[in-house]
Amino acid sequence: MDIEWLRRHCLSFSSVTEQVQWGEHLVFKVAGKIFAILALEPGGNFLSFKSTPEESAELVERPGVIPAPYLAKAHWVALESEDALSAAETKRLVGRSYELVVAKLPKAKQAALRRKT
Image 1 (cartoon, rainbow, N blue to C red):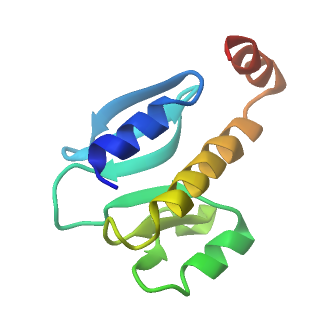
Image 2: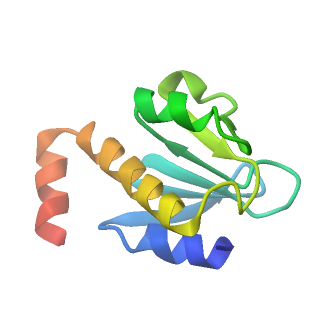
């Protein structure tokens, strides 16, 4: 699992945009709302994403997974390295993050996203 693999995965969801923010982070958004943050430079956390309260509590008990800085109250977690979780688990959790963000959008925006798929 690397940056390009994660980028392709995030862009596979409906209506996703990407942009570089905060200097060295690739941010993935749906309807203007962030669902994943990927570090482009080594040294910080590799990937951050939203999770459920239950998943968040379970994930941060694992080595290499921490509460995401500035976003932990909203149940975001951060992977400290590419290999903190398996590729399959990361793929599932990033998909879940997208779903959680979409679920918080107004119903009209959700319906518009469904029409695009």
